[in-house]
Image (cartoon, rainbow, N blue to C red; front, side, top):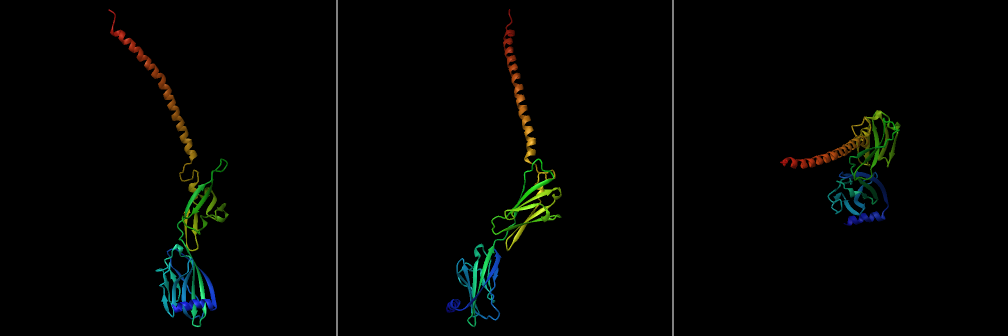
Length: 280
């Protein structure tokens, strides 16, 4: 305990050199926070601390004795190596923060290194939806304007990029990007039936991608058998009108016939009693 207080006092009163390092990793991985000091710096004591979001002791080294027994949020997930580097893992989402290692050499000089750890989620496989623009009568049937929307669920800090899979040069093809690259608008022609587009979702430590063929969603004869609502109406409406008209004609035809039949039956009823009682 005396050595620990001595080390903290050294940080407060002795000249200190501080360097800062950025470290990136992802959830469920392990990360090595390397303790680096200048050449000729012979470490006698060292202490690792978590500075943010809360200040906690993580590990110490006093005259070659390594200790990682402090109760912190990394308890059971921290290891101090012989070279004084600190290993953390498996990492969790809330492990991002600032860490520092304070080292004192045999001459009493101190050296402090601050490390900024950023833990990212692993990028899941993105999903792409294909939307076709409404075509007017004047637009040629051999073209198709599509919008490709790419996203990843429950993930932040994602960047999106697109790659055209085909023989043509993507940079020369009419296209536009919206929503920070998340939506791609592209005009397709008959020569683009087999052309595919790949959406790449990435963050600083991981990436994933998905590929789609947008021409399959275009409402052309060359499309993959999809029927538009206009084609459905052209078939359903005439059939419905024909059935309604047939029903009306049938009802009108049954009306007069049933009237004549009732009248005939009434006449028959009047004739039968006369034939049953002939005059004497």
